[in-house]
Amino acid sequence: MRMRPTLHWTPPPDLPPGTTDLRPVTEALRAGGVVVLTGAGISTESGIPAYRGEGGSLSRHTPMTYQDFTADPRARQRYWARSHLGWRTFGGARPNAGHRAVAAFARHGVLTGVITQNVDGLHQAAGSRGVVDLHGRLDRVVCLSCGAVGARRDLAVRLEAANAGFSPTAAGINPDGDADLTDDQVAGFRVVPCVDCGGVLKPDVVFFGEPVPVHRIERCRQLVDEASSLLVLGSSLTVMSGLRFVRHAARAGKRVFIINRDPTRGDPFASARVALPLGSALTAVADELDIAVDGQPVA
Image (cartoon, rainbow, N blue to C red; front, top):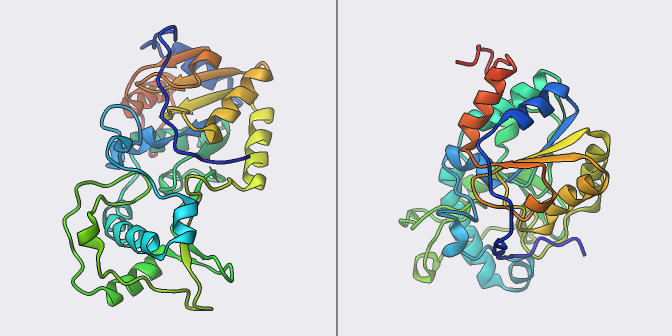
């Protein structure tokens, strides 16, 4: 089944070590035909934490599952209270050097596509076009009854009106835009229904335990099939929704490159894993290729 389960992965001791040599990545991009797959690690420099790795939020936070959200009104109350508070921070995040570099590579014609596991929309905000949002977008909401899709900013206005004075202090913000709040802090929070039919509203994202839409998976496979190589940026590849494309590329004889500080579940399939911060690494690659980022020469 095409699921996005919560999964903890322990790296085996025989994984090849990471490198700091960016030359293989640079040469792959110089040759062109690269499809990029990004994870939460590319957004950490924008203030959005990763799930895994050092400081990852899974150590303190269990993401909402589709089963809990649809079955339990209290779970929906807890989710929307936490997500509403988190949106104030999450919705204000801005693209960082990594997002801008990916957009610059695309403008320069060396990429054939961008796939992201993130729900933050920061690739698009940086100027990337045609991004496949594998897990959806947090800036949209969908009604589970009538299927109506709306803007998250409009829902935020309605939630503010229904919960005047709601402003608890959160312990942290997570990659899914969920703030860490206690049960006491969310007690009394009012959830608002769909304005069209009164149904249950859900963020237009793939929850853990929910199937990824088949058409998105097929589109991603097509992008991998059409590419010369796959470049993974900031993903542990712990969940199958991203790892499947690394395996697919490797089976097709395509080179896989990974930039991620920590070991990943895709390392056995990769030609190299570069263990460097993404923003500075991608900026260095752009500089080597004489590709301007944000319309300015890369310093």
